[in-house]
Image (cartoon, rainbow, N blue to C red):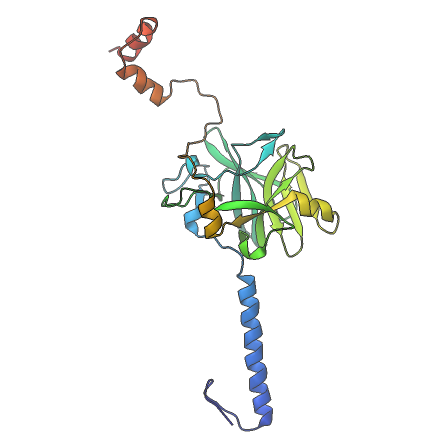
Length: 268
């Protein structure tokens, strides 16, 4: 027998069965690889890299960070962002999603380490951000309840998906990691406690209060409102005149009550 597609000459029926098995094995392997790659892998353009000292690389600013639905004390958290950490050590590599925040000029993050402990870092990870070329004027991601989330739309790396865990009454919501195939999720709360949940232990809670970060379809993306221009995060109090106010006072004629300010900004 001759198999022109493979360029192989088959001497007997046994060989033909072996060839058939090899072809089927190849098809199954390809299907498994394609299945593993069905989730959304994000390129460098969607991440701001935080240096070891907590500063940002490549001209990125905190204004590029994307905000979602984190909650603290029943109030929306503006200073909360999806972060991603990769660790290479003697035990190999470890990846996890967590929550980043700006702390007096440095970008820090909370993660669950490989031992299930709270790990706080100020640098050495990435923060989910607007596309680097600013070609998108909408947030292309959203969190979806785990019971409705599809793995092919989930933002993931090496089998872990970016997730958000909320308390039952939504007093708190935190970013962390999920493994959709195992139906588990974990995060670190604002007071540093590690929360780990699973579908086996509490299927209702997992379905209703664990959310998976997904990439919007082109239709969904075009339906959402355009985002306002980015504003850099200022979570700490400042005890100096902001540059924009300094410029305003310098270039405007003084009002009677502001003569002292005018003299201050124009003193020699």
